[in-house]
Image (spheres, one colour):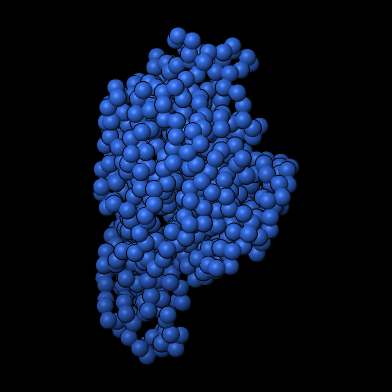
Length: 567
């Protein structure tokens, strides 16, 4: 811990500072201007902007200097990387802190999963703060691997006051609106803390009721009208730009001089190939500035705005007494990074090693037989999930079935694939069946245990035999992703940490994911991030139609509905 008397002495030039980065153009998110400065640092804290005698002097060369970036809403599990592996990559892209919601691993392992995420991210150069998962399980219409109660919320908030900042996204908005006792108990347990929201398409009186119950932010907004109403009603707007969820270009239209301080950029879910190939918040800032967001405002939305919302003391800006996290840029509009510093130390010279081994096999699956996938013909049409490119919302379509020998089957000619979700936590043998259009798959199958939010085993394909082969391969590798065709495994990627993450070197995970994407490309798969798209087809808190192990879910009605309909 820095000693205050030493910092005061250093600020008054009575002691030598550790680092002086001379001649930068500081993007000052506090005064909303860009001005010349030197950055003096001692014991990881900014001392001032003047000339100081320093142990180490770095020539900033007139580069722009911005505070380290802060992601206010991310699921680290969605990167497919363990927390230390993720942090090492994100730090190189200018990220200084993230606020993560570990509800993915919590839905698989409960409290033990949260404890793993806390232990694996403790003491890293990049700060990993946590929001306590609010919805484990997310709904009553799926089977998760655990249940967390209001008592668990109180327990974690009490035991980790410096790491857990509040209650994570309250996805069960129908439960809030009807006054579900357990939902309200969780909100009550987090009173006085930050409570994040999740309110897709809520408006009018329902939005009023949701907000007054406690949630203060929303990252599920997709239209300008929706964003404007939520800002008017006091919500902090998280503008999301993830691998599959891309809302930034639409939502920046709502920004003005008076409301941008109540907005932040977040990524929510970002796959490893996107993270490594394009970046983290730095990529969002490039897109935002290219879309016309003024540079200072854009940087504020990835730094100080987020820090203030989460009550992070002296984080998210550069000023005397603030933590010395900063990024040097060769070019501000393109956010071209020259170097990154965390607590005044170069990221390139920092260690991201962490000792938190994961030893468990979370795959408990039964009934992996072709017979389990049969859909007997019935009267009427098929309720079908319609993929919306670039979004996690889906359409609910009514399509005529293709019947072969008395069974409804996939139809490559219409881009109609069969979809299955096998329960994988209790070996119950339960499987939900449906159909999906918009994947662009012509043959073969893909399977994975990344299936929001309960992370059961989801499989899509044009052949029952290939679907079972892909599912069996995922079980064999202890969870992960697999692609098959004609009974042959074309590619697979093991994710042994709860079936969600890998602690293998980043390059190895990225290469494995690329091999899967390449295999799917050869099978005609049309979407840019195949498994990101597949993983959200089981998420029953995002409209309109989704599939869980318990069946098709009409999210707008918040109930399980039959596959066949005469409507």
